[in-house]
Image: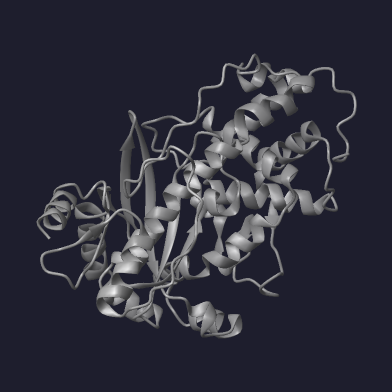
Length: 387
């Protein structure tokens, strides 16, 4: 009995190694993995908790959230994008931008552990019914070495967006406490819709946005949701965004791998002129995803297209941004945007995602300059079409 007591004393002194704990036991008992806590809950308290099964990468550490940086590539194609030839483009994307299998497994294992920490350790008032990976990681468009994550936490005890909105301050406070004290995360702040955390590992930091929401897609039809949003003022419609994230994930994640590589290429291009302290709001990743998919759809959705040509046509669309008008009718037949140019969110008929960028002329000029000077497009006689 003394040895077991010493064992649990050690675990309480090292929560970074044993992030999962029982809320009922006094003194507190901590566990290394969700299955260990689930077995304790069953044996000690008669509680059966469903646990997702994951194959963690061999050699992975088991702090609540640990990301391993990707190996540094020493490829000969690591030259600036503007210096790449057409012959080098595909190799560059495959070796420098497309995440390798080992890194994907590592990132997903880390995020899965954070999801399970929230699923099993958040107190009842903020207990999740489900946690969804959103953002680039959830949609399969992450760039190699970029492991930031958006996690939508659907709260089991909230049923309306208005109820969620009113209670967000207290929800944020509880999430920050549990993530900071027990989850192995550094809480870096909050936005109007998310708790932001950062994790440090091997000299690298990795960010995650935790977005509490309500799973209204399971209780209401899209028609009912959009009608409800229509009755709300503009400022309150933004609280529906996280709830609609599964529709965004579905829209982007199902495109072919080559379209996702074109998305990665566009993100890399944007980051090539992204200033660290600039007040310019460049197009966010989701907007670039929608522009790429929209232009690809306009080209009749070829599955195996020429990446050089696809890149050219997306950059041309950005150069001519004032002519842009992209909308998907997958989830709604009419939208509520009256702007001169727009890229509508396929999950939200009220959201012109182009408004998330405040420097379109600057971005368009970067596209013009790249198309004029990049080695890719010198001596390219025929750039018509995508094939």
